[in-house]
Length: 92
Image (cartoon, rainbow, N blue to C red):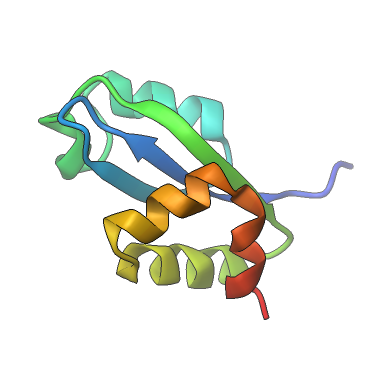
């Protein structure tokens, strides 16, 4: 059986804002967002585009990183999109 992974993702909404989320299936989750059935925040800002995605071995680690990224400023999130390896700063 394949090991289950947990993902933190960053979306760019139609109004150019950024949304951070957590999921176990990125493709399905983006489809849900774009169908207008995702988070309330993204429903009014469709369509959304995946800008970055990072996998984690445990749910708790993914949720911890998601929370940390949500605390970041827009400029920090844009730096993360440009340099995805910066996510390792949150894992130490």
